[in-house]
Image (cartoon, rainbow, N blue to C red):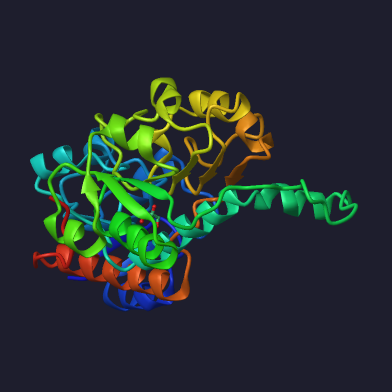
Length: 321
Ligand code: DGY
């Protein structure tokens, strides 16, 4: 019998065409996510769903959609939008899309680091606002990158790819925090695993690559920003919830740190009234780190593989633990 699935957004045809060919599928056509009620309405009675970070999948969702559901295939490497323990308890498999966005995300981390260190937002605004007067010896002076110290918070795949770019490209010394030691990274990059507070105190650049969980929520709070150098640049391409944004705003506006580059915020989009939007030393992107042709196509392929395997009781290509 043909399986029913709901796909909560248009995803690249590299995955969607196969889902369409092999299932009876409904694809949410709008740019904005379906509301929780519409999500449930469409997923009710389905064998599988393809979800995005903006779709909350929790006990209420599982209760409402019914016992037929076998798999939630998340179109993302992160899965903090899904209550995985609840899914496991109900025997629903959860899939994600690791590896294929490692390089694209590390590229954006480095791009943000350059932009925030070299005051590119201020430079761009200066040109757009027609305030460019002349070449100024004292204008737009930023931070050097060469041979500075990089602190990576979370030395997983993306943390390592970012560290490699900055170590081999700019000769940066690498410090990191990680749940477990990474001897292979220590050898390759001459990196050192340190305590969080030491990383904050020593690093010229702090780049966040940890997942969002109860331990990492708001780990960058007022206390953390106070421990950083006043020349430090803070980069977040992981999850907005890792940062207390009021504390970040305070740190940026009082000169506790030099600048920040964010690809993620909490919530997304950042409300118009958020004071961070107006900070010229804060470069903010609309969560685009995985937005390259190959990453998004590969994410769609894996999301399709996970979905089609899950609805047929086969092992997923990438199942989250
Ligand atoms: C992810 O995959 O978790 C990113 O944040 C979006 O691509």
